[in-house]
Image (cartoon, rainbow, N blue to C red; front, side, top):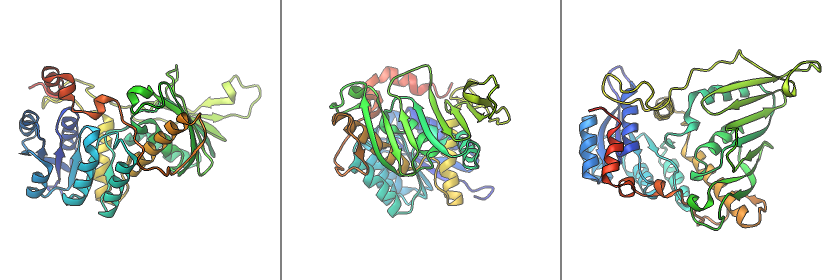
Length: 374
């Protein structure tokens, strides 16, 4: 971009999270929110005022009247597939952002990836941990040989929301390799239809490159993930990061002969709302969101893949469905890709439906109002 030109951003769905996305884009030097599409007149009026943007009742109307560089779909999951495909096929945008999880059926996830690929449009899969810049710094160190050959990944969080968080991060430390097969189990009923019934999914993933991933389904004292190599270990809760080196000293007073490497330092992570309202009256949207928005900008500007691309979310979703299918089959191994593309896995109800209807208008107004102090 030039010193004066900015990428023009249009947001489809400017509720609570859409407002955070909009603020994130306006904080970046190369992007500006210029248009909002939302069928809710109250949300639309508030967003137009907050962002000094033009408003439309539908995405189709916005695409017909705007020349957008980035389309950001921030919607309940049930609307994601149609809106991402519509943006890819008709908006003329250079890049797309959508929120998590991407879909509730393999067929929908398939067509979302296909539409973006057919139109050559990079797709960033929302405000997710995989976008965090410090994780990519750690991955670069590991790729440079910091812990030797990667052997295993232990993920200390149950899988929900189609694996959009922990699984997608595990993939990046497994070199984003294809998945050969999985086994899985659920904390609840594997024959239910949604995360509200599964109550968390755990399992085992065997990647094509031989790396193994163990997903814990129950909450424990540990959280985050541990990447174990032949020469060391990387430990992170995705906000803090530590490397440990193997020390060949039998008399060393060290657990498993692992010594903390304090030479590896990372920029502190700044979470959402830290520091209170800024001079413009806004709460900070958080480093994770800022990294995610920067990711689509970098993708367009430099012709590189976003940090959390749609096809990785697709892989995480399919792996989660496969682990659920394994649980239904007595924990039998399940090969990927899955043959039955009609399989579904719905997220929790609060990810599936409009939150104003779920929480009630009064509570929703309080929540969306907290983004600013005016």
